[in-house]
Image 1 (cartoon, helix red, strand yellow):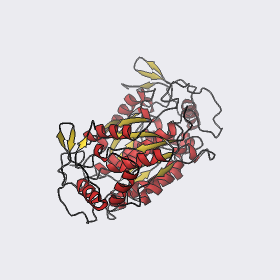
Image 2 (cartoon, helix red, strand yellow; image 1 turned 60 degrees about the horizontal axis):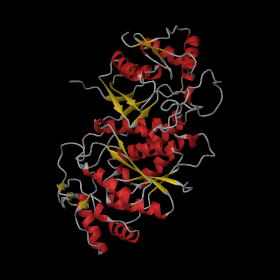
Image 3 (cartoon, chains in turn blue, orange; image 1 turned 135 degrees about the vertical axis):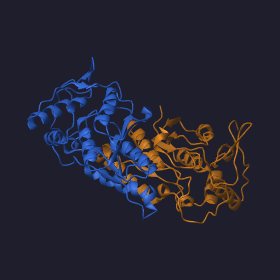
Length: 235
Length: 235
C-alpha cells in the first residue's frame, strides 16, 4: 500500500494545471485530481482533464458537479461572447471572469481534502492571470488559507496539520510554465487553453483569438517550443 | 418593481435560519433564500426549508445541489450513528461535523451574490455552536469575509460594495433566539432542528436525543415557550 502523502490537485484540462500535476507527482505525492463541472460552455475541457489526469499519473480523477445556478453573468457560463483579439495589457476584469470561482473550487477542494485527511492542495494560478482575475492573486490565496484553517478541524484541533494551498506556478511567466512542463514531460497536446474551442474529429481546435489562446501562443513562442494547436482526446 | 436591497440568506430548515430570515425581511431586504442539498441523510430539512422560506416571505428560494463526494466522514452524510444524549459541554468536534461545510456554503452564496450583484449574505451561526464546529466561529467568518472580498470583483474594483457576511444571532443563546423568533412572528412549528428525524404523516418527528434536539429543547424551556416537537410540512 502506498505510503506517499496525498495532494489534492485542481485540474482543469488546461496547460497550467497539467504542469502543476506533473510537479506534484514529481515531488512524491499521490495526486488526487479534481475537476469541476460548473456549467462551462467549453465542456470538452472536462474530457481533456480526464486525459491530463491519466497522463499525469494522478491516482484518481474526480469530476465534481456544481449547480450552475450560482455562477451567472460570465462569458464562460452564459450566452455572452468570448472576447476575440482584445488588448491583453489592460487591467480590468474580463467577461470571462466567473463569480467567486476559485473561492468555490478551493472550498470544495478543502472539504474533499479534509474528508480524506489530506492537507495539501495545489492550484495552477500564475502571474499572467493576476491583473484581471481577483481570485488568481496571491493575497486571495493567503486570505483563503487563513479562512480554511479557521473553518475546518485545524481551527480547533491544533495538532492537526494545517491545510496548505500551494501555487507552484505563481511566479512563473507563461514561457517559464511551458519550459517547466517540458522538463517534467508534460504532453501539452492533450491540454486545452481555449475559452471557445471548435469541435474536431478527435478532440477540438482552439479558436486562436481568445485571451487564453493568445497568452498560450505567446508563451510557447517565447519558450521556443512548438504548440500543435489541437487538443486531442485520444492522443 | 422592488427597490429593496437584496440579501442572500442561508436557510437550512432549522430554527436559527428561520429567525435570521425573519430578521432580514424585517430589516427591509428582499431575501433570496438558498439551501444546500449536500447529501444530508435528514433530507426532509430541504422540504422544511421550502416551507420556512415561504412562510418567512423570501422572494425566492433556491436549493443548490452539491456533489456529496466532497463531504465524507460525517454522521450527517455517511452511515455513522448520530450521537444520542451525549454530554453537551465537552469541547470537541462532534461526528456530525461536515468537512468545510460553512466554507463551501458561504463560497457558493458569495458566487450567487456576486452573480446577482448583491453584497449582503446572512447566516444563522450562533454562540451555541462555537465550541464544537470550527466553521461557526466569528473568527472564521471574519477571515472568510476578507478572503471573499479579495477573491471577487471587490478585490479589484474598489468602488464596488464589499460582500458582507452578517451573523445576526452570533451573540444570542438558544433561548434568546427563540424569543427573537417569537417577536418576529416565526412559526417554529415548520422548522426542524433534528439530525435524525423520524418520518411522520405530515412531516417528521424529531428524535429528541441528538445534540440539536436537546439544545433546542433547552432553549425553548429557558425561554418559557412551548415547542410542539413536530416539524409539519403543510402547517
